[in-house]
Image (cartoon, rainbow, N blue to C red; front, side, top):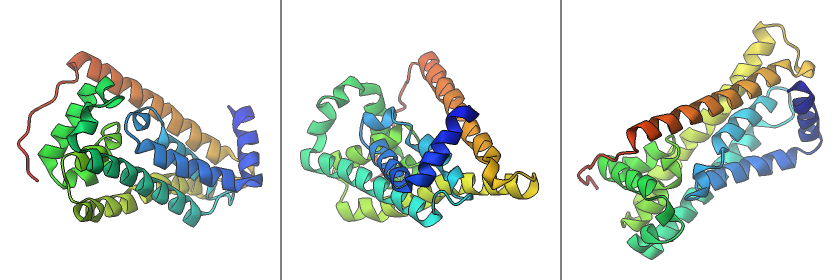
Length: 219
């Protein structure tokens, strides 16, 4: 793992703009219906946040790249749904994922406007709620009034843990920044947790058949 991460860290140090672009695309694609359910955007953002304490990346640009990508991704999905209304929910490729579409619609009905806020933190529904909100006729002003604050919370929530964890390892565990040990520990931990979490969710959904609980609209 060290033999893989060291060249990656060195490459990012020499070409930081590529890391910012990667963060932007990870946040953007994670909000795209279907694509967002398979792109590990949150994992990428959490992992790359480890490069902030050592100076390879700048905190303000990492936060900006993640936030702008999320705003554009959610906004694009919302406007597609807003323009095509419910027809989009019965169009390919969404027709290949009827269970997730039904779950996102149920989630939206259950929490109303707040579904847009909560969905930012709930994969894979995160990739389907914006388009569902548009398809169900949610007003643009109401959508952005909830979506933008959610993203302003979501971006630091995905970046700061890595920054703080790696900083703490260097400060209190006596690890040196130039040794990259703290970065290695954080990145490997993030990837491992993502894999275990993904398998756990997959097993749970398989065993429970992905049932969707009906809920009354609250919008």
